[in-house]
Every structure is written in structure tokens, then in C-alpha cells.
Length: 377
Ligand SMILES: *Cc1c(COP(=O)(O)O)cnc(C)c1O
Image (tube, rainbow, N blue to C red):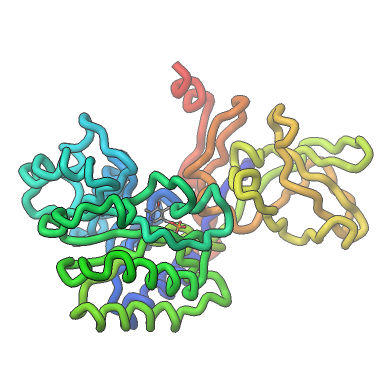
């Protein structure tokens, strides 16, 4: 098999989905997939067995949800939110969404009548900003200073309440249930008087439900207690990362080994183009069989095959010297990776593959020169 390639493991994906389904069964919440984090639609036959639909961030994700997810479950729901909807997209979005979530009272007023006239059954919601968040990184903090995401209580227009079916908030990033508890308290403090008028509340994503150590029982209790306080109101969760979390890996090949103060291996992949959060978050991906620098006898810096000096995955140590042609496996590279890939420097996009339960690896997508060329003119 050629590299680079992302390999999603069906058994691991299903394990996550079963846990998410357990949360649905026990808490009464509905869980939908945030396409922003994981949109490998060749797995949607599996995802749709467990989750109730998708959350989309605009026309194209909404189309993907409608065309590629709903074909496996005609009752699946499409929820579409955008920081700002565009005039030319809004009618198409209305036609294919079950829920539409506006970011501001201005956008709501501008579009809601048109949306309703196209799709009278559509549910209307507003994203609010609970102004509570302990998100670990500013880049991923929707409630940070001057955030444009969601409407604060100060800017909330109570006269909208009559027209709204729901409220959304999204304030977490890779966080535990106690962070949700704090956000929920802030949300209720600021918007509690409006909740009884709503049909549903959407608790957003960022719930790290499938990470080992996540307090699943606490999440279930938070949702159940919330539903009890508000007359069994519908609750949605919309995780992306928790669906794709630890469901597979990125496999790459060592192309060369150079020396400049240390040993450096150049791979046929890229931190910048293929593992962007390793530079943006930043974090260091685990490499199968490797240790921290100095932990094992042979330490290397692993670098990408672009001309960006900082295209570095990090320093790792190995039991044996690396050889040209060796395969390396970066763990947990299925969420927020291929959805963000670029063809920077003209390097090949990694193929997408699914490892079936019987061990067979099926390549579901390969990329070619034409994909690079046609995007640029
Ligand atoms: C990104 C996002 C999500 C998904 O977040 P995860 O961290 O991947 O769970 C859900 N809802 C909204 C509005 C988002 O922007």
C-alpha cells in the first residue's frame, strides 16, 4: 500500500459509536456528528446506525449530511449553523436542513422568514455565548474575549424568544463533564428564563466522551437533571472529535535521513499539510513503538516533506536505527486531519482507507495530480 495514508479502523469507530449510543440511551439526549471534525462519508453507513444526524457549518457540510448521511437513515437530522449565512446559500440551506442555527439576532431577523417560507417545518435556533469556558487554548475558545461566536446575554433580544424553537451553545474543546457542568451553570444563569419556552437546547461539541477517563456517568446525570428541570426538554450533543477519537492512524514512509546536530528523518507526509493541529494546537502526535527523545537508543527529529522549516512532527526515539523505506505510524490521526488537509507545496494528499473488522484494508480514496491542479485554477 502506498503512503501517506489515513487508516480508519471500523472496529474502533464502532466502539466509540456504541459508547455515544449508551449516552443517548441513558441520558435521553440525541447525539449528532459534527462534520467539521470527521467527515469520512464512506463510514456513514456505520455512523448512521448509532447517531441521529449531523451538524453542519454551512451549505457544503449540510449537503454532505443530507446526501451521504441521510441515505442511510431517512429520519436523520441535519442541523446547520454558520457564523454568518450568505444571501446566495440561505435558501438552499433551508431546503436541506431540519434545524437552522443563527449566530446573531441580526442574521436571524434577516433570514428567518425566508427560511420558514421555504421549509415551514424547519426548527429555528440561535447560538448564544454563555461566556463561561475553560477551553485550554485561545485558538479553540469560543467564549474568549471579543468572541464572534454566539450572542451574549447583553446582545440577546428577548423578543426573539417567541420565534425560537431552541438555543445552542458550544463552549468546550476536548473537555470533561465537569467543564460542561460549569458552562451549563453559566448558560442557565444568563439564559435560564428563556429555556422553558424552548423545544430543545443544543449543548454543542467538545465533550471528550470517548477519551479514557472521561466521566460518562457524570455527563448522563447532567443531561438527565437538566431535562428534569425543564419539563423533559430535548437535549442535543454534537461532538466531532469524540466520534473520530483514536479510531485510526496516519501511515508514512521514511524518505531520507540527514544530520545537522542530530539525526533527522524526512517523511512522505507533513505536519503542516496533513497533521495541522500538531502545529496549531500545538501537540505532539504519538508514534507507534517510539519513545520520548533519549528514552530509547536512537533519537530522530521527524520532519515533513514540504519546504516549511517548521514542518516538524517532533523528536522521538526508537529501538533500532531508522532506515530509508521504514514505515512510521502516527496514532490518532482521524479527527481534524483530512478535513483540514491542504496541497501546500504540491505534496500528495494522503489516501483514505478503512480497516475492516476482518483486518482487510480497503482504500476508499486516492488523490492525484489533477486534484492539486484543478484547485488552483
Ligand atoms: C467544532 C464544533 C463542534 C464539534 O466540536 P468537537 O470539539 O469536535 O467535539 C460542535 N459544534 C460546533 C458549533 C462547533 O463549532
